[in-house]
Amino acid sequence: MTLAVMQPYFLPYIGYFQLIKAVDKFVVYDDVNFIKRGWINRNNILVNGKAQLFTISLNRASQNRLINEIEIGDDFQNFLRTIEMAYKKAPYFDEVYELLQHIIGYPDRNVANFVANSLQKISCYLQLNTEFLMSSSIEKNNSNHGQIKIMEICQVLGANIYINPIGGQELYDRTYFWEKSIQLYFINSMFTPYKQFKNEFVAGLSMLDILMFNSKEVINEMLDNYKLI
Image (spheres, rainbow, N blue to C red):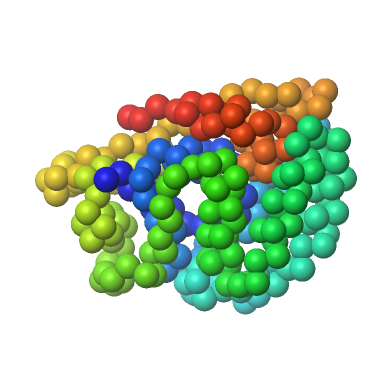
């Protein structure tokens, strides 16, 4: 069984969804400390041909609290207006905007649950078959940290392959995983250029941008554009 563990990011870039598609089970890492100025509640969209950061407001967000102890404080009205102005003329605006409204209408405002639902909704839209779990629902020793905690999750769930974003190469030891009979790989995401109105292509934006400009079939081809190292 192939596994990945990631903190919940709201409307993350395509590499996050490449990781989701690449594994059998995806664990939303909700019982670790919140990181300010990270990607849990913000990302970039295309506005007037350039990347523009959006941020979803949170209540009492602190690096001294776990992600699943923080609530969303945003009503999303400004966010929806910004999305409509930026993407109204995009080819897949109507269906993606409807999807976005369903995501935003999710009643649970716990940021971990809210974002996990958004990841599942987008994955369902793209017909991905990955199973989602919350880290907090897995019985483990929460005093552990780093790769030791990840290893325990792998063992509890019975994973024999663990895939991590390439940015974690310095954090995870392939020998340590090998000794536990688990293969460790890092996913190196590639960006497939696509038409963004008449603008020069801007890579690395929120998955929302890709959804607005591409069909499900084309997006699934993009999701396969990576290398495991």
